[in-house]
Length: 160
Length: 123
Image (cartoon, rainbow over all chains, first blue to last red; front, side, top):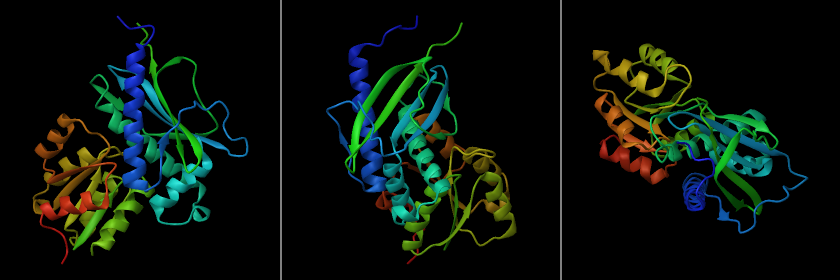
């Protein structure tokens, strides 16, 4: 039977796993600093547009994995990936890099989810795009380059 | 030594291009499996293909199967580059003819170490 509320220890475990995955990507691939934030993001910087990358998981486990961050962080990540300065990053390249980061997080997380399941191609949109039909199974608040990021794992209840 | 990078992400192709050019490879790129197959059929100069697993259109696994079904490419070295870390998936890729497998996120050293294991690093 599907749990209606997640166990508190399951959420804590997920936060640690999400943190490790983010650290691994940020340090090895981007060479940017990243730390866990003690305070949940209550207010995103109002002068910074947000980007949300999303990968949908389908199969025995259904849900989605989101990476939310200010555009400035996505821009620094894209610059690191393209080997250019942040001011030289084109909008399409920004979306491509954000999608790839979300895809990497999801791919690494997939091995920890019930199998079989498959990942969608990543989608990237502006703003804090969260659906309300899914419940949060894990999340972590981070800071990189002085700005907040959030990674969220949502579970969608299967319709019988 | 010529390498073909196959990935739908321009950012990932850029990262790999930087690493491989720095190691002395001549680098070519394709956005998906079909484009890579078309490229291989036009030229026989490629020694190594680095291919992503998850791509729209022909994905990396289908590309791997297609390439290994063509006798002229039996000597071509193939390395899967993917974010998915399941053992079962790695085994499938190796059984289908991949020579190596590198996980995203990777470091420059991890990629070069895999190529060294394949004995394919340029002098």
